[in-house]
Length: 299
Image 1 (cartoon, rainbow, N blue to C red):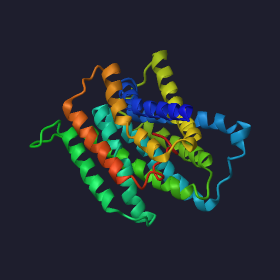
Image 2: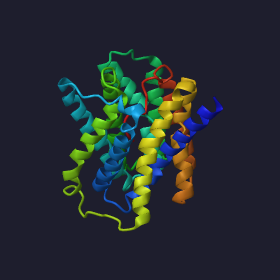
Image 3: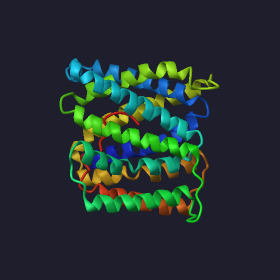
Image 4: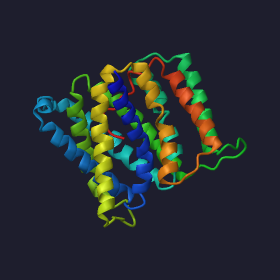
């Protein structure tokens, strides 16, 4: 049990650090090209994983009726999700981005009520209000009278919306498709779709020639979206669901700490207070929906 909690905590630290990793990477690679490259290495990892005898048996051919949904998931839930994340991090603060994305389970709950006919509770509405107040406080930097929204924040909101859509679609499709098969095919679609945009949306096209930057790109892609996801899926069965849910809400605090360590960005009182509101609101609203928020896919 201790080992399982240690590995789950490791995953939370990795995912929380990804906001700072992304902020560093967009300084050396243009966002669309970075998205395409990351997806390429993620797909390579998944193909390598699929070649293992244990996982090879899980890869199945898709039914033609599922192809449109897989394509939609690959475009919206993978490519646009990843692309908007890196576009947003060009100007958005990584801690603010982490806090906004921490509210994904709330939006997921509302979408589940619409598309999966799940019950919408008073607890969810109350938690949503608390979380929104926290986001406003963080974005406004503690000022309750004025707010200046960076355009990067808007793209991070797009990331949050597409992430919630990905979770809903993954849950619906996973009833008939193995999660590994679903993840492999949707990421492959996302990568293929990203290729032409990498050379048309980025102006200018920025590519680092430093080996260290490429090693950082590849390493973070494989560790964040491959190894950490695999470790989470293996160990989550041995961890109490409510405690795992609370641990996952620590990602914004990890982003704050990593921002301080790697970017020398001081942690402000507004961020701490706002994050407490956001995380508290998420825990309140998702108390009965912790099974919905999973890590199938990429982030």
